Image (cartoon, rainbow, N blue to C red; front, side, top):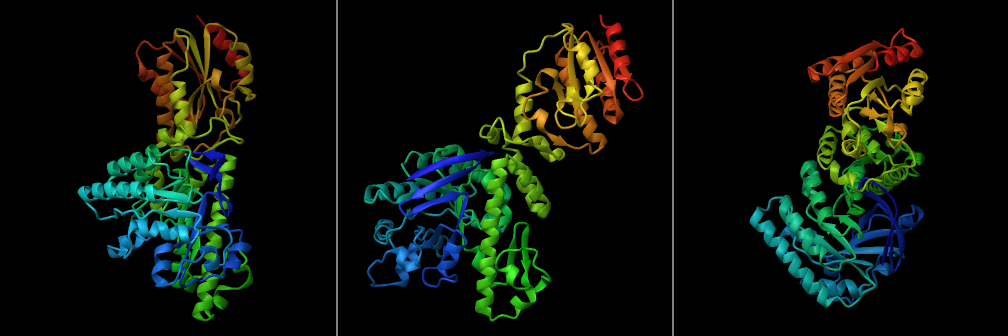
Length: 524
């Protein structure tokens, strides 16, 4: 097995996972196939470029009583990577399965699976803390038993993490499973949370698992199959997930998109141009026989999922995964809560976000304040060694970047930058204070932003700039004031400390050369 990472953004990764039957790109969603009643012709997977699917070894065994095990690739007529689940979901649904943990491990080896899952004990959504702890202990015990019995080393074995909504148990489970040599780790019991849109709990579960598991191994999230939420779970570090939702939704006449779910009965035009939607209309599809309609909807839903995965990988390559998250929050209010919870873990995401990206970032407003790049800037800004007791010149940071290259700032910067008793700082919309020394660093010089003209935003930024100025203990402060932001900053500086002398100069209507000459005359 090899898992190679080719790109990163936030905790999201673009990688290649290699099994004995081939390689596939991550992030990846395994379409779950019913081994006893497949809906889609395997030829479709090949044509769509889907290189890895999942089926249920327990259902396969139960559906063929007395029959000798047969190569799963032949059974499904699929030559690519096949992953098999062990029946744990059936335990979650029905309380038990008629197979022993060692038995299902041996069966997966006999059917020549590529990725096998041990039979863990799911915690579920409704377990109390005591039962959650017991499911964690039992899953670890089963993992140790499975590792002793596993004979085939060419199969990638999955170590499940349990604990449910009890985050301390999830963290403990992750640490324990991380000590065991599984090729892949997986987080269990999230399905009911996703159905209830309890994304706040899901975020804490995933982060707890990521913190306890080896980062060199891929993480699988069981049961995540709606394309609209893919960006969020990828951003949290889930490399793979599986779902039968594409088929289950189709059975109920539901049409998946990257922004949500639509009822086929209510659609007038397909906005999607996939090979299914481009060849028919909603009306024509509605008139089809039920099996044919279900198959076409399933194919569209599957293509919608893989189209979203392409979008996510491209966002990672460009360093714009956070932008995709912000955009997606406008599709559903629940996604705003999703991102708000992710924001609480921004310092953790920052550790894995590249320090330099191929393209600049975007600052859309308050939600962007907590993106990891901003967290990193604020943390590192506080550690910059700065000389105290100088005169501080505050200049407006406008749309032109680097800020000192703004034609209205350049004449002033040219005359002041080399003066030993002057410190230049720009007051900006996205970053608040930007010291001259950082003006050309990433992401400051590459950030696109806009001025929302919200008084509360000006006040927040003015407070940040005033705190920075106060830290410098300046002899004098020259504020080249512009607009409402400049006014808010003048007010904040005046109230920061009685000893601080603030000399205000209006930028509007004043030539830069005259402003800088005025500053130089007043320098002490």
